[in-house]
Amino acid sequence: MALRDTRVTLAHGGGGQAMRDLIEEVFTSVFEPPGMEDQARLTAAALAEPGARLAFTTDSFVVTPLEFPGGDIGKIAVCGTVNDLAVGGARPLWLSAAFIIEEGTEIALLRRIVASMAHEAELAGVRIVTGDTKVVGRGAADGLFVTTSGVGVVPAGRELSAGAVRPGDVALVNGVLGDHGATILAARGDLALSADIVSDCAGLGHLMEAVLAAAPNARGARDATRGGIAAVLNEMAEASGAGIVIDEVALPLREEVRGVCEILGLDPLYLANEGRLVIFVPEAEAEAALAAMRALPEGRGACAIGRAVADHPGQVRMTTAFGGSRIVDMLVGEQLPRIC
Image (cartoon, rainbow, N blue to C red; front, side, top):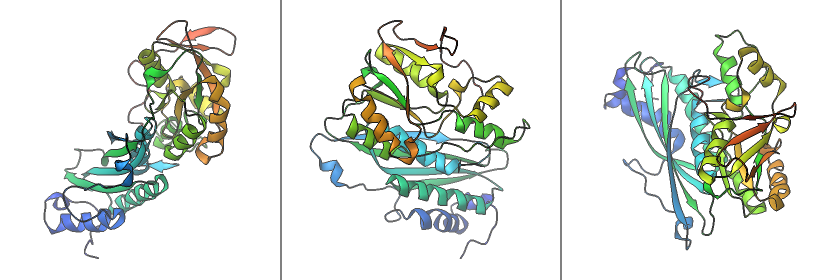
């Protein structure tokens, strides 16, 4: 092996042999992109299907700490990009990955994160086909930033949109909520919290395919990342013009997450998730969709949490455990920094 350094130096971003060694030994040896060009050349039978459309997304990921129970920044980057494609009805196929690395970052840490990304890509059935690396001086980045872009194919006839939600549709989630946000809080160690919680970080491409096979008239879906389910429900209410009512008693929350929120005065509706989605389906297809979710590991805790209504258009309300009702608004500011 030519790479003998234990930490990243500015030389690893200088365009010379040190940079080549870092890229080849840490990144391309694991991702194995086709060729060594500056771009990926994409071919797939799916692109030739009549009526198929390309879907494209991009996102940047920052999180502290870089590794945490249940995942790391690399796993989030792959899962987050796959999920952005999947909830729009696309079948994810290819990803790019760009890394901004702070001088002094441990190369062993980079190797673990790259291995994690490769593992998640394999699980999701996607390939990381191109990328980039940049090294910045100490203090210019928080260890590591990752930017990923994804390309997928939307099969002919598949239409998913937040604006398609209609009164009577049922809101489903694929599992317990808030685990990622609570995990990051505990992992930082600066709030003296001790909780046995693991991030929900997971790719949802296979789950979405199963749900759409069982509920072909599904309206729209969103992955509930920053801002939690409160944010995505508000986005869907605004886009569709329907009102949404959720049931506090029906919300799937671990007692540990409830406890963290009670101690810190946080609302679990706004906690970030990295492997959870909200999908609206016609009432007649709700049970089939739930069964399809529960048949997969990432959907075993799936349940219905509410429905779209004709009342209070564009607004989300929650029926409380005491029988009252309160407005669930968009988050103003932020509860926590750098969750995803």
